[in-house]
Image 1 (tube, rainbow, N blue to C red):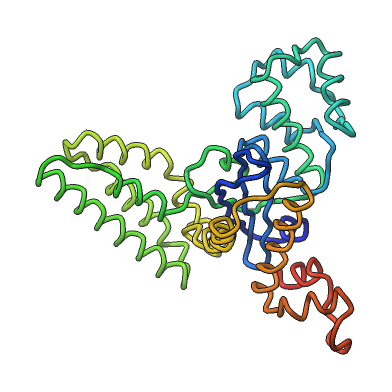
Image 2 (image 1 turned 45 degrees about the vertical axis):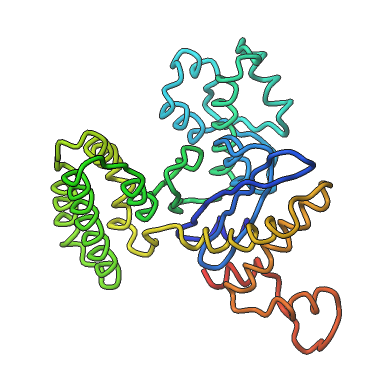
Length: 322
């Protein structure tokens, strides 16, 4: 995952429910064109997502990236001023980070504030160690994934129109007409991605404005169109990054194997079992994306079979592909 986060131009993310030790957990998938990783934990919050994005690093960093994050989250400037210094501050653990906050007079029992400060410290860690960079994060509309350079999945956005419950034939016709316009726009974006033309970007933006500014008189539909219009930059991120997908289908496909296993064998009980399941699934999916036989990969790592087919570390292959 570290190699992927350093080198991938985009990642797609998704999550699903999981059972562990007779409790409700969540499995988050993080994947790119050449890698996939799975992590299961008791939370699917933004704090949890950022902790996954920082990989094996456990430190917290207060730097320019962290303070920019706090500014975007509209944290009290007076409080931010207490923490700001001319040089980045590194803390080796959560305890050291909390101690620093307490020393600065911040109430560490204010869970809402501490959560946001923790998110900022983790985001500072991510940027301090060179992870993500300009990587685009593509997700459905789940709030925990809305960090960094974020793009929205078109399929999930359109799916919200399918969930509307029109009460009259007129409303049914209005929903169908808008969905047709959205799908025509989506197909045009797909065609543009094959041969990107910067000169066409403004035309797509104007066409987006015309579609999502329509008011039909059907209140629920109009409210949805207005909400999607506010997400214009995230839905049209592809115009600035033509190499990214328009959807999160890859993540859903990666998670399908996990869901199948969950239906057959339920959940896990021990920490080792949970980690083993996530690790093996990530290795299998990464091998498939790299065009490496998972069967031969396991044989090579376990020193079984033909020793003439040595397979390099997957992280090396992921970086080479990038």
